[in-house]
Length: 326
Image (cartoon, rainbow, N blue to C red):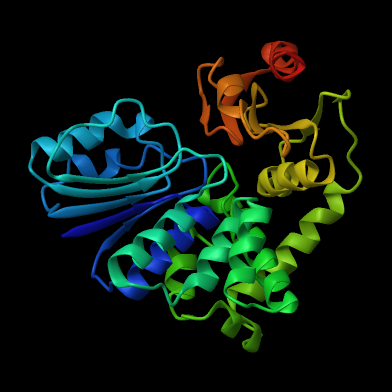
């Protein structure tokens, strides 16, 4: 049995969409909410695994499970842009990795398909994935190269944002559409623009949810604000968990010279889930700030902490401010 393992955000879903539209394959899907990244552990101990595709989850966070699969001579295709740690040396591993802050997994798959197939007829999906990962200038450049109209570009930007928004939550019950189901639905649309033609398509359902949630977001003010960074605190409510990541992207786009963080109180009331965005003018350091805390990780431009204890809130703000002050 082949397993497709992928992050439940826009980048992971759209990376797999491009692959399976080009290379159809029967597979078992393994995914979850955006922060659920140790996904290979769900595969490594199964007896029916013949091969694995892994997309948009940190190799560093999945290294033990990856090594277990490779030791069993299971072929693994791994494409990602997060921290890797030491990449295993194995002829069973095909690794397409790039940690550049202007790259995402959807773009890496786009390039991989161009290199291996001569072109990628699903480039519109790649552009939506890049927009979903807040790579605005990179997505715009690719869209212009391929001759998309301004209206098409704006739609792909909105679509990527909505799919990314859908991935945020403490559990699958927070999400409007479970990522595996959303992937299966989107697979019916080789062209993302076809979503516009069906009133019941995932695009319209996510758009309505997004608009309803943002009515709550617009009333929030930062708990810390300086020329260096701004920090927002969200309550322990489903709408807050769903909007935390995309709101961080929006803040970054509005104030590109500042770092931003959104702290969302977890349902336990004992800690926060943290989303960090590096300044768009200096897309480095988000991972370095977050990995100072035990459950932190991510990439240079965007990172997070799964469980930041309440008493460490000020220490986090000091770390964020201090990193970009220097």
